[in-house]
Image 1: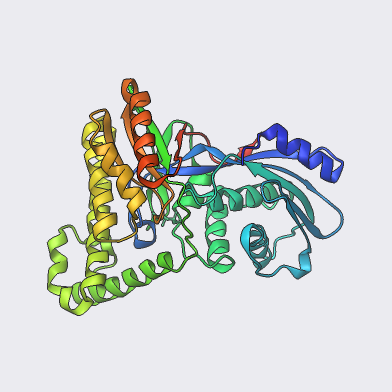
Image 2: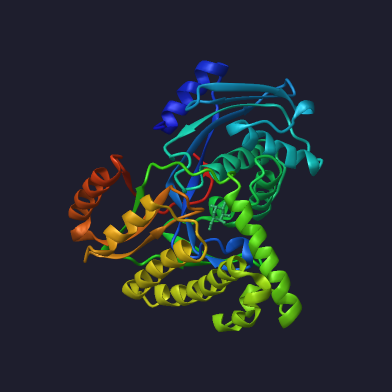
Length: 383
Ligand code: GLA
């Protein structure tokens, strides 16, 4: 899983004997606002320099010929026979299926892809794959969908083929990301504000537990259902439109019995996280990184205790980070159940932090965790 653009170009030429157009499609980080994108909340993602490179050309065969370098697997599927399958193929075909539903004039294409984003690492390799396919087809077939429409199309593809009822965060960050900026994304209105990331003196570091999480594993969809149950009660009882209309978490208490303990705790997390993300955005704009970091720890606590999407490996990494005076904030990132933690660390403390945390993790779990010093880059683009 370490292909460069040059590797992808070479693999494409070997396979298809022609020169491809090259694209880059990024994964994402999320500073704060977790599991609230499908709950009308705010999130703060950015596109990163971990992602997937694509080589693509149109062909005259009405066929999708697609090669995954990492899996060393190919598919060759006629456009008229696109249907649900499994693994990486589902993301590719899911996108084609959504274009077809819009009755857009899609053509057969050749594609090879590979990159440097860990699969299942919580950086949304799935949105990177969806975004690379949708963007390149939109360009090469001249389908003229906006980036926002492509993001929404990617989300629908994920719902309909792999069957993960994800929010809009990952696909949106993949398409709309801007270098050195995070997106303060309003997931109810699907609009965003670019927030410059002034974190001079600090470094964003991801640490990969190397524990595999499968979003498609029913837990993600289960959380979504629990929240739907909760908001239905709140809408009826409080005459509100969404979770964001609750400005004091205590307002949930009267409904605890009717919701049941589990649904109540999910809702409590969502309400708190929406308020926290708005507070965090204000702090970031004031360059109060220390205050921001404290909120990251609170988010982790909520994801662990109330939303129950953490695991012992993630908790260990966050607890170890918290003991280090150079770490300003840390929490699990993305869907949970493994994947990465995101840490904001003072520059001068980075190396000693890494030595300590990686060896402690190795000692505890006998796993060599990986770390990534990510940069924030533009959304999916031509190379
Ligand atoms: C996954 C989903 C996103 C979002 C996060 C949790 O990455 O794809 O839509 O819900 O989990 O914040």
